[in-house]
Image (tube, rainbow, N blue to C red):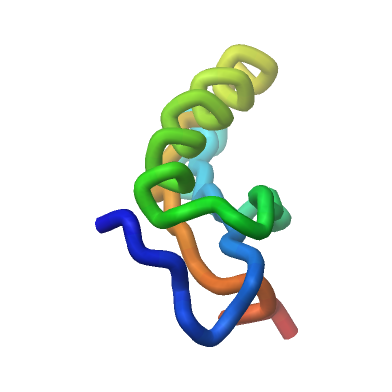
Length: 77
């Protein structure tokens, strides 16, 4: 899909990560805002690059899920 979200200007990339050391301890990282003109395809490509960088800096974790969503959607309370 190369369409932009119609209802927002910015797409965020959000990773859910889990600890290798602590078993099933998982958490959601703060969102990574992308450029305003970023498409969903660009977000998914960025997830590969940003995910590889993050895992290289945090060897005791793995990425469980990468999600591209409109900025502000599903904000944590």
